[in-house]
Length: 260
Image (cartoon, rainbow, N blue to C red; front, side):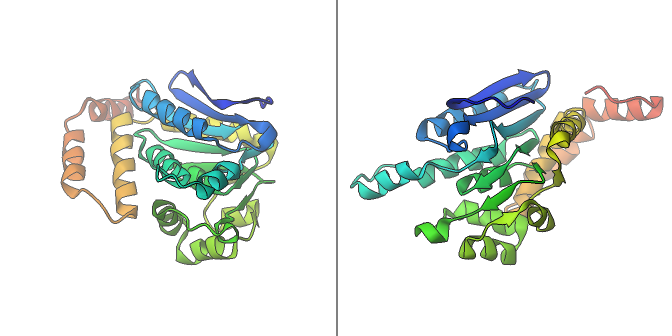
């Protein structure tokens, strides 16, 4: 996956069952503008509606994953008298939509991740990052009370103590510490990043899509202590009568990879 300089809204490409979204403002560490949030929502809707897409890889151009939402736009909104939707609310909508995608998602952390983009990456199901990465949540230094769903993601995925440390101290941590606290699923040198992302994406795309989507939803609901038990039970019962399970069992008996 090559890195090239650019300055545009995020780029979406499709490669068989794989969708790739690349943040593309490398000259400014892929900081996100309002138009980027609009583009991401549209791209998420597009791939969620395409049954051929089995996995999403989210990454950045250049030496960083993302510097988060543009502070200049936040400052402008804070200084105005408008009561329109805040940048934080718009960003929260994007991150929540990413978390809710039916297909598994991988964040390819090609470098540092800062501010709100730490939550964007955390909303992905897997995060594979380079060993030179770092993360930084500066909300406390900026006088910003972070939006509730972002705090909830930190707490449910990283634990109360790690959430307090990252939010309240605003300290930077390196890739090794990101791995230790569970922020990174895997830490690799840059020359292995694409290989490991590709291997995981291939594995995820090869599994039964309906079963994967249903279990992902249940896991996320369990984490939020908001499980829809009836819906989860219905999905589990339906899977026992599905074409997916027939193919899975047949493949197991025939000692071949399943073809979902």
